Length: 638
Ligand SMILES: CCC(=O)SCCNC(=O)CCNC(=O)[C@H](O)C(C)(C)COP(=O)(O)OP(=O)(O)OC[C@H]1O[C@@H](n2cnc3c(N)ncnc32)[C@H](O)[C@@H]1OP(=O)(O)O
Image (cartoon, rainbow, N blue to C red):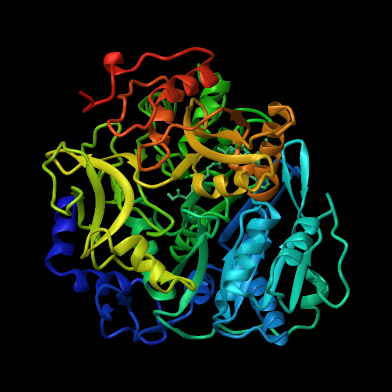
């Protein structure tokens, strides 16, 4: 069946469609119903029982595939490579799971995992799943404060950490970051398991920390604990509009049913194929397509601890594809922009045998046509943009390779996938005609594998996602569709910006800047960047009488964001201005400032309080006043 027939089959019988997909898993008890629960909160496969680790690992071993490579760790930053077969992965997860259980970690307990791109991170995730514990992986590029916020929200019984991550040119010591986070957090986990890496060992705190190997010494391997289909599999935090991130909860049954379906139908990979997602286990892409999707489908997954350029050069991706015979590569457009900038003519591509590669998938941020066209020309395989979110866990819109590619124009991430009825709505919630801009929403119920709620979310879940358009999930993105149903995603409708495929909240950055003693008021905007898509830029108004040089305050503000949110925010520019432009009701005009910063055309907002301030902003950003559309008086002014 092609895309259209498959989508129509889902529309005709959504529950039957997903029940059929559920047959691809082993289940301890097959569910009798796909969807239950009261609108707007639905539950998938709630009366089935299964175990995530069994579905991803043990069942492949039981089927005689124990010698098949499950994980290929390729780490140019350490100069090492290592392969774990499914059999070895089963033994490693059973051992760690047994040790966790011996130390009192039970089904439903939370475990925070703070590890870089090493096989032990995957082992830790699967070991939690094996005993029904709920993991929450925290990305290594966050600062201690971000880790602390997550510790307080999910209140883990244990933390599993590595002693360090390795970034090009520097070792990121996790020990001090973890120590600071534990001091900042109100919640104290019972113990921390620390994997010591030779590049930087952590000082273990007696009574709290235990070495990874000692922890597992003599532990009885644990079997797989059967859990209900709607048991939480993991919590993954994503930026909120305030400093408090949202803990997206994914449930076990729907998660694997949906991911396995996408591996075969969206990504077009069969068991045994080599699948490489060049991202990080700390992001949803890493959860879904480095770990759970490929393993549930019996693939070999590549765990790459390196960068697209600089480890050692812009041929790194081609080397990995050639060496490990990668069939499908999935990464963020930023990675390709970096490679293209370093090797515009693609000379390095030609030096490698990329004959195993069948397709490149892009997601995480807008895929600009230049980059897509460059990748198509250099790789000679389909380059497929697709669109999804931490909340959904898998593609809302795509061009499904496994079903046969549709004719999707460059610039569109494709069409709605089965499970998603996508609508573009006006402010009143009415659908807009094809071609018109509106808020992108998905009719409820959301499909299996999407967020089941927010951890400790209470009303926040409904308020954030379900209240804007009753009966729909609001994606927070604005866009359009064309007559053929191709979606075009244009901009966020909230304060989230996308920096190198990382979703960041400008509101959270403003909270940090406002904490500087000399800052009276501030705004953070996302400005266009050729490499990272967007970069944050801070505008600061200082307190009356602040005696310190403005450039010192600006530099301290840059350092503050790095220390409190982390290097991943890539916050490098803060500019001191006298005043911020506002509407007469006091709302800061961030959108207009972003347009000025980007050199885009802009209109004077009708409700602006003092138009002269925009000229001051333009001068502060560019050293001169910038032309605006019509270069005229405020709209609506007589
Ligand atoms: C579809 C659903 C989704 O959207 S899920 C999210 C999908 N997003 C992704 O997969 C992310 C894609 N981006 C990337 O993988 C990276 O940005 C790539 C393209 C590889 C570039 O990396 P890099 O050159 O390090 O730039 P960056 O902007 O990521 O980093 C900024 C600063 O943060 C640091 N950083 C990065 N990762 C870590 C880490 N794991 N641990 C510690 N620090 C980290 C970088 O070193 C960099 O630091 P510095 O400012 O240069 O000192």
